[in-house]
Amino acid sequence: MVQVQTASGDRVIRIVGGVLAAGFGVPFLLLGGTALSSRFGWGAGDPHGYAMIFGTVLALGLGLLTAVVVPLIFRFSLRGAAYTWSMLVYVLVAVGLIAALLTA
Image (cartoon, rainbow, N blue to C red; front, side, top):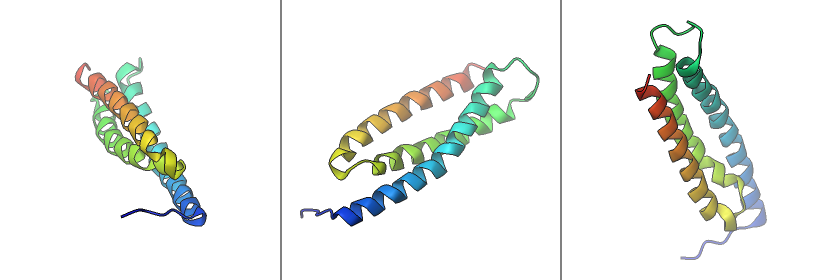
């Protein structure tokens, strides 16, 4: 079965993808930053490590959602490559967050 994309349908998908990417991406960045600042910070703002633990777990989930919806921003013909790059970047960031958590 061949999927036909109309210009207006593709535009709606790109707008919804942008809204979802911003909705998932901003909390992902904030939680990832919180986890990394808790790991590499010099202050005593997180003495028990809860911000690092919960920040990492929640950032991993939101990062996966972000990686899935970010390619929707691109044109239909570019989405395959966008999914590949998006997942590659997600895996690298996830490995970094998990490494920071496990080496604390």
